[in-house]
Structure formats: C-alpha cells, structure tokens
Image (tube, rainbow, N blue to C red; front, side, top):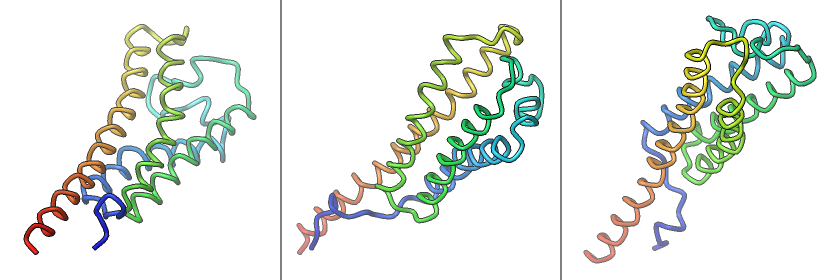
Length: 160
C-alpha cells in the first residue's frame, strides 16, 4: 500500500467549487476583458463604480493587456487544477495566484489612487486582499485533505 503522503488525493467539493467561484472566475473575467478590450477595461473596471484602473492614468494598452494576460493565466491555472481535483496541482495554482496577488495588494496598499476617495482606496485594497485570504482558506482545505487521508491510511494499516 502506498503511503497517503505520496498520493495526490482528490479535493473536497467545497475546495474545488470555491477555487472556481472565488479565484478562477474573477481572474478569467478580468483577464479576458483586459486582453480583448484593454481600453474599455482600463476605463470601466470593475464594471461598477468606482472605476479602479482609470483612477491611475494614463492608459497604456501594452500594460493593460499584459496585466490581463497575467490575470487570465492565473485563472486558467486555478480553473484547470480545480476541475481536475488534484491537491498538488491546486496548491501549485493557488501559489501562482498568490505570487501575483501579494505584490498587487502591497502595491495598492502603499500607493493609493489619487482619483479615489480614502474609503474607495480602502475597499479596493480589502477586496484584493480578500482574494488572498480565500486562496489561503482553499489551500488549507486542500492540505486538510492530505492530513485526513494520512490518518485514514494509518488507521486502515492498523486494522489489517
């Protein structure tokens, strides 16, 4: 019998669905929008007020579409990993998301947009940070699967 630590156990449904709903879909929508219509994304993101990206002009099509490509890549990675339901793959994808997300949050926390109010800047930073918190909770859920599987394997080994 192979030890549980070496296995790539399937993820709980809540981790898979949560990864798609809270991380993959927002990243995919934001990324596709920025890649396909960078000027529209710049002027209108997030689609309801305040317009967060336009609060830091000037518009740069190259930068907007490159940022969108990064969001899109993270969204694809998380969506594929969650769909396949494999712990190690999802942990890797969430790590990719965090590699982009941490500096993104830090930038906005340390460089408030001059065209936003203090409250709008705070809400923006907290919204970005909530994605990282969600990724942490989802990673914890994936790791708990590993721990539960290891305990079950040890229990089964003792019973045989």
